[in-house]
Image (cartoon, rainbow, N blue to C red; front, top):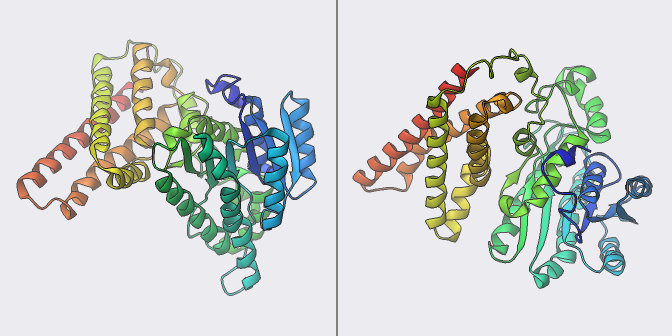
Length: 410
């Protein structure tokens, strides 16, 4: 499985128990397999018979799984899920609120029952599950809770998009309530456009509204490094990585692309077009390495500044950075360290990462550029404002120097 190529040990989740709702197909199914592959015992909370099939598949692959038929919109069903999971495994360490329904149509066409169902299956269900499993996590001082989001404001998918936005807000509120010292980490996962039965079914209904064919809809280049839909296994591998490293993503929105890119596992069609010799014929210039080291120093300074803030401003600043810069500060620090390592090794390992890296460096540079304007709203002293803006301008310059150097390298 792809998850094994992400540098995660096979026992990364040994002794842990994970509940994945909607795990009978699609992302939930592949995530359940990935978590089991990493040693977790997985509870498949699914309303359909496909849950039993996933249980059998995981057992055949050497993992531990239990299918518990669950209607996540029903409070009694969630209570029975919790009782059976605890009776079977004694604890639940990971909760993934993945179950969803997709209602297509215009706001005028969709009946209120479609909104009620979307709210019940997506948002109310997540609240019920959190209330069922969070107390045990807090008592033990460890746990992970994830909600799955999607793009906001999508036409002809209003109930789905609205509940996904609500799930994002729910997880971020929970993370803020938990703080940083409870040992329980909550974050949002944004999978992108993934090849699942759900999205293919929705695509058939949506294509006429969007004025496209079904084939055109599912072939959109909406995911970094992918031509068309992302395979569910790829998404699940990146998802499992974020769960293993949940502390890093606490209070943030994670995605599968950074873990895959870090490991050089994005398909990287554009990178494949580079001449095979382009990164290996000559040694990596010292200038590029210096630029990468300067970037790392900039990011370390940003991280120090975040750490010096009090709790609420720090939470806001880190979330704003992650939203605008494409990744959280911890991920950026890791990317910078990996870049230096790759350059010191000759640069060949950069081939599959280069398009993704350039795209995100552009976001980082733009973050520093935009923040130069943003600070005007909360720094009143003219001298301090000028100093802050100059520091941000220098940070933007450092990122753009690296971008320019990488362009010359390829």
